[in-house]
Image (cartoon, rainbow, N blue to C red; front, side):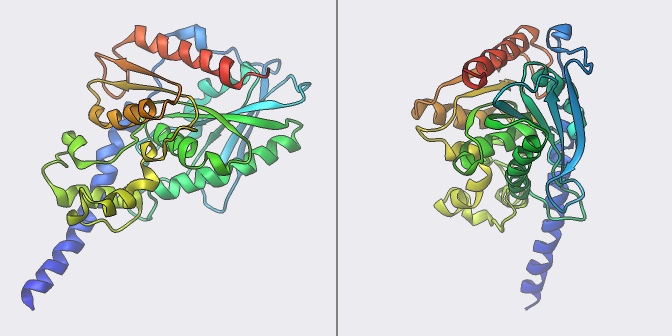
Length: 323
């Protein structure tokens, strides 16, 4: 009986440790999130009323952080517009839609309606998970479409993007939720967003050596009870599927542009191989840009960053621009 009580207390203690690990392990990405832009003026907009207007903190749900900002072009003469959603970084525990204002302004300057979305962040006092955050993003899109319509912008197509945590959520929406989107998803572009959660790929956190830690951390992220004995089984794959974007890739998945740093230890570089393999095996149009000298911030490869941004522009022109 005493041994069982000790085991029970041990599980409770480990539960708190895993939640703390979730917050601590990813908080570094709030510091080195993907906001570094070595291109300077090329992708920076001199924002004036002649470019567009920003509507801030529009509610899409009951949560305190269920808010989005909408950037609309001044030219409202087009019959329809494309929407580009950009999701903020911050390790699922911090960050804000305003962090990406320069990117959103640039997207709007190209004639798109752009949206930055906040979502409930994980902390010690709530049960937010990558899964619950993905559902909030899913629920926000119909509201964004309706709000844009009220302002005189009819949306009939969209792209979704983000960096780090935002990249993860963007991939989930693009592959898992595209079929239920109120407007067709035409493409996704993202940088350093985790798309898979296998312990053997997450060596920087030592999860390959501790099944208990892996089960605890990924259970928190998935919002489900995952035990160590589930790792490597079909039951585990099923438990993490809702937050593992690569598992939803099929022959009908949208064109994808992605970038990863070879020395990334926040979103371990090894984890990106599952996404690339899935895109390749399903013949999905994609471009993968590897940053050979960079970690999570992608800050050591200016040439590759230039290629990523130029390729982003190319994808938008090819897949989202009005024909």
